[in-house]
Image 1: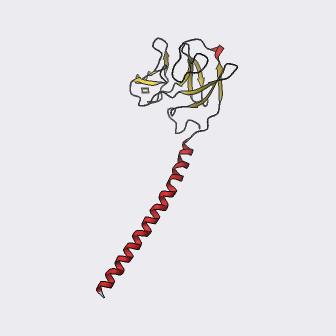
Image 2: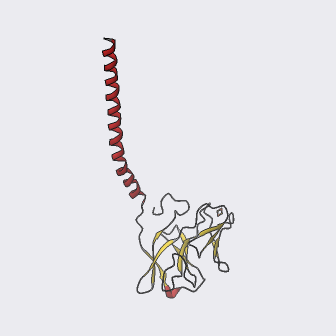
Image 3: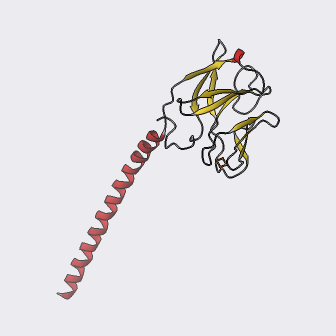
Length: 172
Ligand code: FES
């Protein structure tokens, strides 16, 4: 009699374990779908925005721009030699946010060493290396705007490769 009770208890335990296992398997089957949805929500649909024409640019003289909206200042820059992420016939046109990734101070361009420099806590970013941080408090590289040049030489911004300072999403 005692032995039968133990067998019943063992069966119940086994069935409970099976149910938990089945629930876990079902949850793990759902999880990839949820992850895929979360990933797609994290992606941002950028609008294209014409910034200038190639003929408007002078080598090493930044042009003030804003992208993806008026509250996101940046610069458009022709560097005079092909660089990473550069577009146009010479592969030398780039654009960056000028909001420092550290605390949002406005960066200024130094044409001598082709860096963007922060007056706040002195972070520096390399305009010839996709905005790579070269010194300072910031923990991110500078957001670089994705550019395209059309057949007329018009330069269009079509995306941003890092999160712009102060935003939860680059597109508000
Ligand atoms: Fe630019 Fe702090 S705000 S380094």
